[in-house]
Length: 138
Image 1 (cartoon, helix red, strand yellow):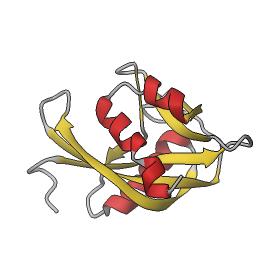
Image 2 (cartoon, one colour; image 1 turned 180 degrees about the vertical axis):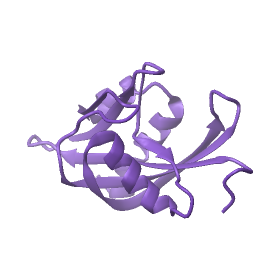
Image 3 (cartoon, one colour; image 1 turned 90 degrees about the vertical axis):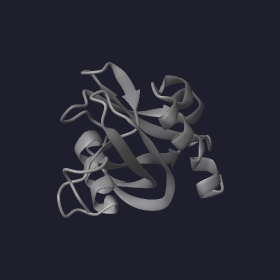
Image 4 (tube, helix red, strand yellow; image 1 turned 45 degrees about the horizontal axis):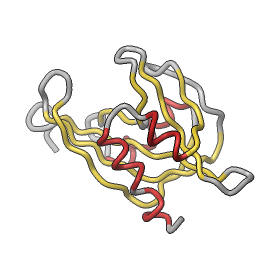
């Protein structure tokens, strides 16, 4: 894997759970720098696998320790600086913790699935979120 050449490599997750009423909710993060709502994600560190980065980045941004589930769609796009970015995502369940904002995120919160599809700022994240029910047979 080459880190100065090619696309920026990143990974993240759709952290989900069932509420008492049976509906699904997911964790979204708010990034004040861009004033946007998105799925937790971040760049791979040198020598790190995509799976390791996904778990680490989700914990760093949400304060949640998670486990990986099925892989969800990968997104590719140009970031704000014009670099190609590739982000791999996984469905994730919580092992421990309570959502809180950390690092470049000021808020992380549980949001009902339908509300999350409306609140997310980027269509590419909505596409990943919409793949969750099929990946989990919900």
